[in-house]
Image (tube, helix red, strand yellow):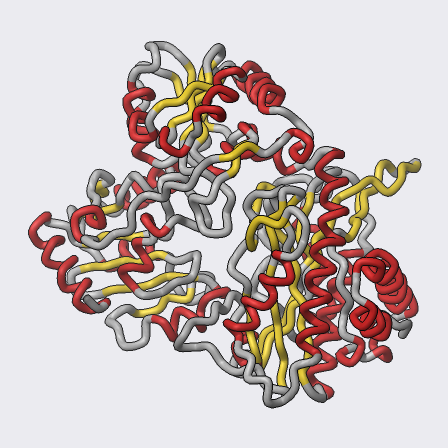
Length: 592
């Protein structure tokens, strides 16, 4: 069944059920960024495979909203269907809510599955729709009814992350969460986000592709902890270990019953941004609800000393893998017939050789020439191209190890780059260095740092459409909150122990893209009469491309930083490299 046939089927269902519109998001019941195949309803419906997007269907129109990262990919993947692309974030493009308000008539009903929309969003939409006389039904589940070949729920086995890697045991983490509950006056706390559950209980799994998590809910009470999970995923030994630490198992689907049976007058803490509306509506009506962020979000963002030590070692392992890959790539001549997809497999193989490697931390972005202009390009059988010997090559990849998560982007030129390409690369590198060398007062937010990455591009009338950096989990999700470096004024301080990325870029549609990404650790620099100042430590070890750097565009301080960084990474990685690779790497890290 193709996309247009699915639209016809859905519209007939809408007529039968008296819906004027339905909205299908990218989300699952846990508000995950990357979702298991079982919940990839928007992709099933539209054919668009990006991680962010919302489909809206009325009886005579179909729209797909997605952001800058996926404009080009979405245009290509929905071509030939009746879906129209709406470029979210563009000044003249309405949000899908405003589009519905402008399009529908009073008393029309909009359908949204409350199982996959957050409580915060449903409340926001409901208020906006009600003001225009529109009705919102959150009990519908069209996908369950119509997606007949839907993939089954994931069933990977859960496993424990040892305290020697995590740095804390689950009892200590539960105690920290209960302390926050006590401060807020909550007797219960519901956690629906998979990475928060994984962090709290030191559990990992493989339920979501490249995300080491288990599909579950967690309910922490003042004297009992319940993990709602398919019990077939938990071995007898792990169940006993959890029980010893005060964690009891319950079936995944029983969470709504448990919420409805919480005693009258109890107080429950939920995160409205990260709790689906169905769960919210299941809570006993005689309970008081406190709406605050999950305590685990802030706790897991600050890595402990054990984790930081592991991350420094992991940076060496991952650096060795990436340098070995780049050496291999450099040996591939004009007739090598390597493709984007085959190169992704080669890169995976180099990481797999490293000690305690588990999996990729996300599907790698391997992009040649004009594909590199797509910020989150993903090679498919249809789009895969041969990587030739004359063009820009960008790869954004990472690994999940028991000792941490990595994320790195490098851009190389195969052949002889043009002056324009060298200039663009150098402008991006200057922004990268500005962030890497930043000194900033304690309490600074990420949006205050973001401008540093863009300043040199702005002077040339250029910019990039994504944030400069995101948080990174520890053997968890590669994108982690709450801190980030972006233009959005997120009120989260950059604290010592937070791990983020530094990844400015520039993208010329139809031409090429450049992005340079390192992971960075927030640390204290010094104290003086003006207060405490913070700095970043690099947690990524891989060279930048000297043949793409215009040294005349660099200040003395920028040259010193590049030379110092290259000297440092050569000292750390060369002992782990084969002789021929080390010799090549020495040339790549020569002084400029």
